[in-house]
Length: 314
Image (cartoon, rainbow, N blue to C red; front, side):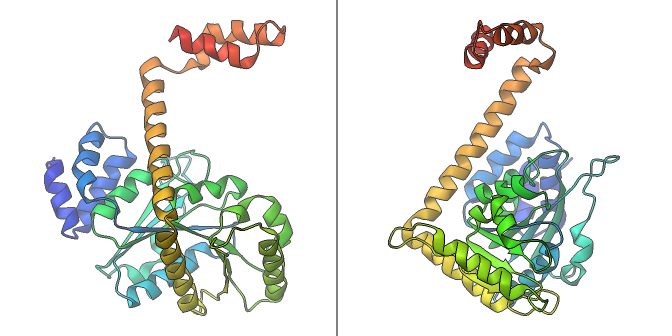
């Protein structure tokens, strides 16, 4: 096996095989993962992360491919992490977004990786933050993170991205219902895709009405609504411009630093909790849980006191 240092050097030189190998080490939770992260640390922090989310069927993958084309026309190197449902047999990515992005397959300025959720809820693979670090260190100026369409829990992408695009489309159900599902709360830019279909104007009106209801302080970001027809490339220039304007606002307002600090805090916490579980084992089979559960049911303990008992025993 090649040394981690050599893999990182090759990845920074733009070698897609080295990038793929590093992401595989991340996904597989390799024993070398700590060494990988330590080697990448000096090179991370420069990429712009764009999350793409929305209900199933709105055209997220098609829009992602079209946005890559638009961004590449402007010069940046682009990475794509397409987080797919897992195959129940192999555990690998089931949909395979790389198949849908064949037009970019020969572009050395684009790196596309499908990642399996492997049962992780929230629409993102657990390894996505570390995979982002690999692409960041490998020189990607922009990374698109496209999530699986799993509804409300998909808002997890907002914690990972600098800018979150929320896609809706006419004919996918009432726009107000989508808002009630909670998915619109995370949007920095709203995209009405398939805007050539009947009902697109109504979706836009619904969105505008909801945006007006949000209380804002002077200088706060007001989410734009961009109409697109991704299969034709319509509206992609306007979408990329909206992303650029949000990026400028993030930097000017200081929100970019705040978002990234929250992201790293969450990443550290997740790693720490995983390490604690690994160290102390899974509590599901612990007989103490049954005893404490009985005490809670009998009114002798409350759940917090019961949890304190477990923590104190560890």
